[in-house]
Image (cartoon, rainbow, N blue to C red; front, side, top):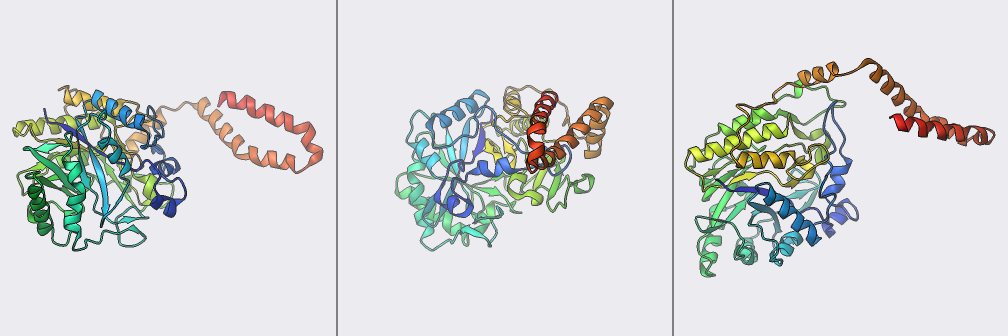
Length: 419
């Protein structure tokens, strides 16, 4: 059975850079809780269930995450690693894990070598931290990473420490950079390392960068399933809506130039919390669709006799991108259970079970309505809409306040019981 490795985001604790640019105490949760629906039936915001709004500086949180992940078939985490010309950020969760032998979970790292911007798009404007790729960076990066690669829990491929680079195409002379890394690791007695390039931002060829392998990173490079024209958005929408099943099927059918590309699936995707009207989101991101995609991916890898190749899941906890296995208030453990079902060989579906269009989904919602229930909800809606105005009017007129305010309060309590 291929190992299942979930990408892990460490941005759930305050750091000075975020305090400066977003306000004191900012974490990923700040964006998550501000999200709002873009169309009728849109699932936003995504709010956590079992683990709550956790802080990754808390040791017990890490232990709870590991226990939950292992319970449902996750074999390891891949930590996003933020390094900018010697400056590390968001490193405390990884450092704390390395110092804690009780955190018994295999792991590897992915160097997130993009610019860090206020727009969450790695562009070269509104920069918070820039990737400069200075001449000394090649050696300094691998020097800093050596203690991590030497950890006994670190994941290996072909007995070589496994390291992912998120955007190899951004490195000015990637082949030279990776050769510096390899040579330094040999000198330090670590031996050979396995360097993998993420297939992101149009890159689909890892070999030209001198890499050992590639790893899919959906929804990057998704080319099918566009459905903006089907959805009736509340306001102007500048992003991209995609049909989950079509995107997933396109990745199942993808072929690449190199012969070692690791497959990746995602449970759902919706980065409305970060980018609002510029969001990319998947329609029909259901636990059942995810289970079929993961099951089919496992079968595909095994059919090619690549069962020693890991399968990646994007992601364990990308809450602001609507992309998480961790339990939420809508689906609970459903995505985790789907992961375990796929890993245990359960094959309940012969195809993606949810492929309806937006209009078909809305028609179902209309057919499920009831006349008197809708009338009641309509009246309640307009009552609460105007309740605040009525209360302010009474408060502004002292001669009305004494006789009427108790009646208003009683009415509010009464209606809240039926709402």
